[in-house]
Image (cartoon, rainbow, N blue to C red; front, side):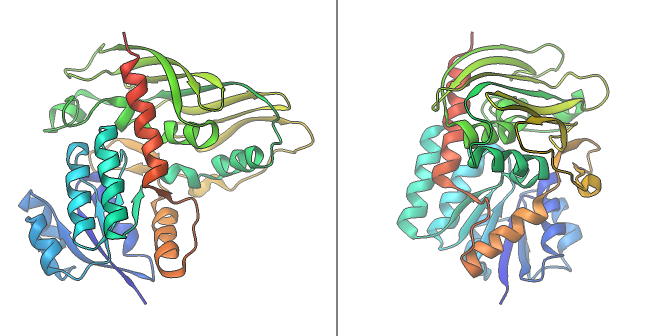
Length: 335
C-alpha cells in the first residue's frame, strides 16, 4: 500500500516535502497546489493533478494526506477544509496563529475523524532524543533552570522578497517562524508556558514583527527559564540551543540548528555518541538555512502512523495546541 499525498504551497518547505516524499517507498505525491502558477511548472510532468485552486484539489484528486506548506495565516482555513473533505492533514509549523484557530482545527479533526498532525521535525534530532530519554527516565532529577537561545541570521531580502513574512497578520512574529520548534521541545519536556515577561524589539529589519526578543518564563511543571531569539546575527546562523541545569546533571544541545550535543555531565550516565554527518540544516533555494532536515524521519512517521498504527513522536492537534498557547502567552506578556 501507498499513501497518496498532496502538497499545498510549493515554496521552500513545500519543495522540501515533495523531494523527501519522492524517496519514501510507501508514499506517492499525486497532487500539488500553489496560488502562484509559475511555481507549478516544475511539477506538471511529475504528478497526476497540478493546479492553483485548492477547492478543486480537494474535490478532484485522490488524496489520503494533505501537506499544508503555505503561509502561516491560512493554515487553519486550509486545514479545516481538508479535514472536512475527508483528508488527513500534516500542517507545517506553526500550526496556526491563534489559540481560537487551533481549537477550531482540532474540533474539525474530531468531527470528521481524520488525523491532524503538525510538523515538529526537531524531535528526531539524535541529541534531542537523547535528552528526551533522560527526562523520561528521570535521570536528571529536579530541573533547576532551562535556557533556550535562537540566534540566527535573516537578511532583509528574506522579508522584502516575501508578501507575508515580517507582517503581524500573516506571519505572527519570530516566535512562530524561527522559535516554534524550540518552544515545542520545551513544552514537550516541561509543559506549556503559564507565565511570561517578554521584551520585544525590531532593531534592523524593515518589518512589523520583532527581530529580537527575550522572555523569562514559567512552565506548567513549575520549571523556570529564559528564551532568547534574534535574527540579526552577523552573516549566518550562530546558535540554536537548549541548556538544562538539573539536580543530577547539566546538558546542552546546541550547534547552529539544535544538532550537536555540546555538553553532557549526568550522574551515572555517560555521554552518548552520534554520527552527526547526516544532521544537516534545511538548505533552501532562497539561500538560507533552517532547522535540521529531519523531514524524512517525520514523513516516514506519518506513514507509520496511518498505515501501521505506529506512533513515533508525531505531534497531533491537542499537543500542538500547547505550543500555540505558549507563544500567545509570551506575546501577551510583552512590554
